[in-house]
Image (cartoon, rainbow, N blue to C red):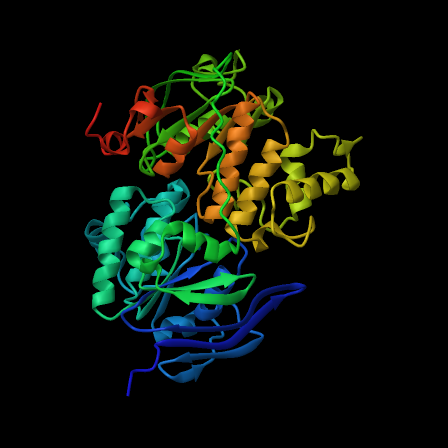
Length: 499
């Protein structure tokens, strides 16, 4: 007789109020299989993973482990069976160090755990300082901590929710090598990714979710990325319109020998950064996470003040000494890489999150909030940017990552900025939503906006940008013409092999 599935779901359903997140899901995952779960943002992928990991409990249906029915009331129940999960949105305590976060799940002396963290990081290309405070880490570095912490549990089933979304190409390759080794040893892996080429390369099975239901099960190696996308979204893939960009005009953002010391021994010092951004162009900044992207974005947005006012100019004015609000009044807009906590307040509704940056849109009167204006703005954003949500009263923290990203980006675009900084615009976003976001940014460029994009998605940068810079250890390369530069050359800059 054949071995039973390591994990089997039978008619599993989950509802949140009026939203049917999962509907009668049937799923089997076998030992030694890398099983992809495909679906648009909001299709129910993350909810399904939370049910398997015990974060949420199903309203109906059954979950079987090695042929025996189980009831997972909490994550510790799943961990006891041998289920580990790396979440798309991180579950780390920012006020603790890396090793302290790991010690909350893994027993052992701090010194021993620190050595294990370092060893795993070296082995899997996920290097991180065990003693670094989490709040000082970039998104990519936090992702590495999550993966290491999970691998230290030696799980039988490893759930990975967008694990490569902020990893550089070199680390992705090493991670895949690691996953294949784990697969060869019999580990089962549930893999969620919006990068369809990765799924085709890595996975042997794929279940397709659409509107909370399983609509198909395929071998992804037998399909190209476009056909997988069509299975996933149920319609023809949209195309990004590559209209010829208008010639750049007036200068709208300028960095003049921008230097800034690192805030702690875990940060990155920025040294002598020069950059020019003009109306009607998109300029990209590539680089491996943790090379100063976080510090640079904070300086440009005004969250961190520059050492000299003239180090940063917006619309021809020296702004290095000004805060975020003063810069926004000059026509600046900002989409941070961290959606929850910086881009949006999780516990607040979408309408109230609109107020945070769009209050200048007639939302305030004599110190009072004009709720009707706030809701109308939010509804317009939801409709214009295809945000899948029940409405303006939905909590930001309850939304899928891709839909929250579309909302935050839409909120900033609706302010009609003159200059815009977008950090990791399509992190964790499905292929349909990513295409829509890039198309919107290209439309803004054509309308004359000056856009600076910080991204670790090299394909994305080449698709949108006319010029590219690379940030490596706090130093910014000179501008490279995207049309005359190869990804391989950008990769050499990223690892410091080019100057």
